[in-house]
Amino acid sequence: MNLFTSNKIYLDSETVSEQLRSARQAKKLKLCQIAKRLNINEKYLIALEKGEYEKLPHGVYEKNFLREYALFLSLDYKKLVLDYEAEINILEPKRQKEIFSKQVIKKYYLLAMPKILKNILIFLTICVCFIYLGYRVNKIISPPLLIINSPLADLTTNQTSLQIAGQTEAEASLIINGQTVLTDKNGGFSQIISLKNGINILTITANKQHSRSSTVIRQILVKK
Image 1 (cartoon, rainbow, N blue to C red):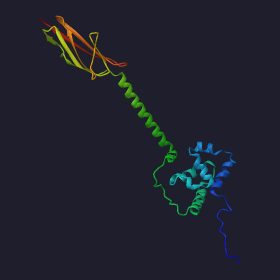
Image 2 (image 1 turned 45 degrees about the horizontal axis):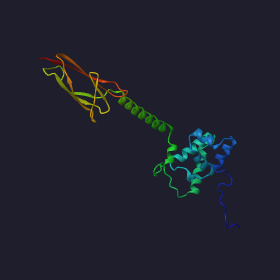
Image 3 (image 1 turned 60 degrees about the horizontal axis):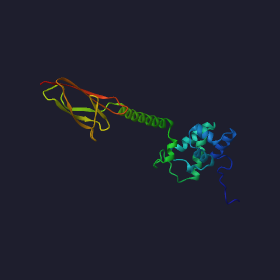
Image 4 (image 1 turned 180 degrees about the vertical axis):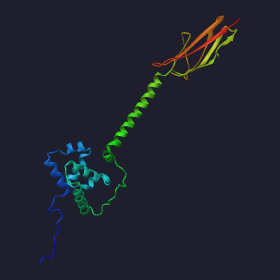
């Protein structure tokens, strides 16, 4: 009489990993080719074929990988997942089975993100780059700030000289009636000019490299 009975586990049937490997080899495909087609990291396909399930990301990803791989190889996924769960129960009886892993998502999980999510992130990144580029271009070509504090518009005076004072941007160059005027480090300027009897037209222009110009015109009437 036999005192011991043997439990047959996988002696009379192929394991999940063997079924996957056999199906792939029958199709004469390489893992790197399949990984590229399915957009799954090759190391996860290797783990499935070697039965090293602990190397798979826990949660929905592991069964998604198995499903995609099985369907690609034209295997019966429903039967395969039952075999997979049976192997997990035997090999890892204490493994916590949750729909979603509570672990912090690690860097390699990003490789398993759905395609649509990755495409959205790429699209948003490109949009941000274009918006920033547009802002920088507009900053370069837009005319500089030009404020004339003195004189006021349409001024009448009996003086033969007048102070022109105002503010522009620090990197802008300033020209008054064709003559370059120096500005301080903050863009402030002050210049005394001579006036003639009658109407005097003052043209004040500020510009930056590659930008449009800002121009202010003042008419000064001198009466003696």
